Structures are given as structure tokens and as C-alpha cells.
Image (cartoon, rainbow, N blue to C red; front, side, top):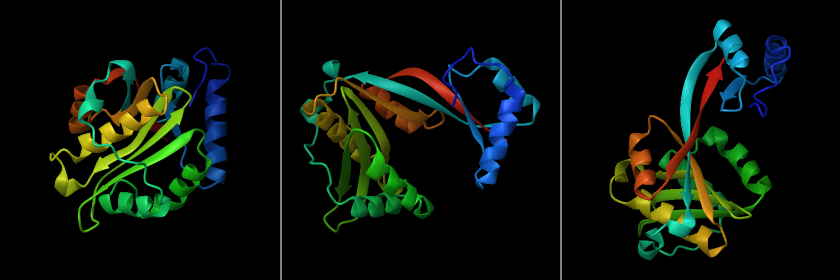
Amino acid sequence: SCLDAADTSDIDRRLLSAAREFENFGRPVILRQTPLTPQPLVDVADENGWARIDTTDVMRLDLASWSGADDAVLRLPHQDRGHWLDQAIAIGEVTELRRAGMAELLANVQGEVALFLSEDTDGAPQAVAMAVRFADLLGLFTIASHPHLRGQGHGRSILRSALTWGVKTGARRAWLAVEATNTPARRLYEAEGFTPVYDYTYWQA
């Protein structure tokens, strides 16, 4: 990820050097193109056969004007992180291979973390969400409902629970990222008042 659109010096050599560094650790190198990515870097990736693999939209919501709290189910954040991860895996939002990485992220993320979980009377997962409040910003991640239960309002309910928690803990703005091709999720977020800010695209060698 680039932080300076004017930083174009020796860009082709630096990209190849970064790619080798990732390969030495057995990791694929992925470039995230945002509005801060210099166009020459994108050109170099394109010329070297890199491929676009995903485009994501970043959206935001002014919580002062959000009206969904009136209809939100007031859920307390889930305290058992291991169980929450189990249920996120059962839903299919987190893979078993990513469990260790997610557990490490939860242990080290800056800000106040709140995990939300909706289950039926038998303990089967219906929906999950993760919220992180940092100062007055609320970031929303891992928002998902069970594939067999989609369209029944579980996603909207868990989203509103997370947003309500954010409001009550002092957040003034919320943001999230959604794949551009995920039309149902985009419709849900737009219905809650989220609007696009910018998009980013992943490139892979």
C-alpha cells in the first residue's frame, strides 16, 4: 500500500525488490491501488503482467444522522473470542486457515474491539460482526450472515447492533469496506445511510 502519490522515484526496481522480499518469506506479493498510489507504479505492474484480482469500496456513515438505533436490537459484545471465531468459521466468513491470524489480530488491534454474534435457540450461528472504535471512528469488519439465512434480516440486525454500540461508546463516524461485486451487502449498507468515499483495487503478480 502506498502512502504518497508523488513517490515515484525508481519505482520499477523498488516494486521488484518488494516482490522478492515477500517471496523470501513464502508470501505472495499483492499491491493495493488506492487514490494515493502513483500511476507509474500501476503502469509498471501492468507492464509486468500483474492482474487485477479484486476491487473494494470504502463507505462511511455520519452516526449523528443515523436513525437505525431506534429499531436496533441491543446486544452486548460477545466476550468469548474463541467461540466467536468458531461461529465465524461455521458461517464461512473466516476460514480455518485464517483462525490463527484472526486471533492474533484481535489480540493486537489498536482501539476498543467489540464482537457481535447472533445465534438461534440451538446455538447455531445466524450472523457475526466485528467493530473497532478508535477515538471517534468506528470500523466495521467481518459482517456476515449464514448463507442459508440471508435475506431474513440477520445481517441488518447485527450491523445495527454494532453501530448502536459505536454510538454509545462515543463514535461519530463509521466506515467499512465492501467488495464492489457484493451487491446485496452494498444495498444493505446504502439503506443504512453509508455512502462511498473511495475504492481500491488489488493487483497480484
